[in-house]
Image (cartoon, rainbow, N blue to C red; front, side, top):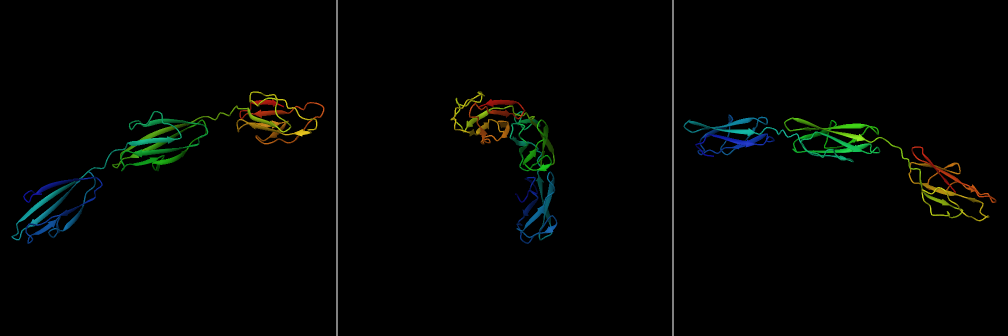
Length: 273
């Protein structure tokens, strides 16, 4: 400031909505008006600024005791609202963006397993003043439900800059088709009447058990390798890992006990004791 310099300018950020002006008279007998409002020397006046991207003129008119006047002017330049509508980061969980995220790329794909029925989308803007919406919901993180196995779901992430400019990123999540398991193996086999004649192996489907003639019955405990498989023991439905119903043994002849494992896709595998 210099008493003989009448015009000034001040630059402020777009978020500044008002400015306080404090003018001090050289001669306390003089009078002063700030934007037409009588103001005492050293008194602060708060001036509301015009919208972002515009200037607000503040005048300080000083009248000396002899009536001569001098007008100082301050132009307050309020910055325009930012136009940054870029994302800083974008992640999908579970899943990996293809290709990897870059600010300028707007379209991505993600592949997930058939068992995944939802993903969490997290998007952060570069400009903290920008807003983000995921599938129309204002948020930077949201769980999105996927379509049925074998379908694709498009997720839109819209970024709105402080000045209103918008940019839309899109992620297509491809959910794998459901493929029923074909695993029809056992992982364990136990006979209460006695030990198997060889160590159990899923690839070995026939076993012998030697037992006393006094042993009248036995149970069989079979465990499937895949929880989606089902089994029967001696022709009756059985529960994996649980003992079967008691099976009567023939005292004069070998007793054959069939075990059938049915995979989720229907493929069957017979075991025999």
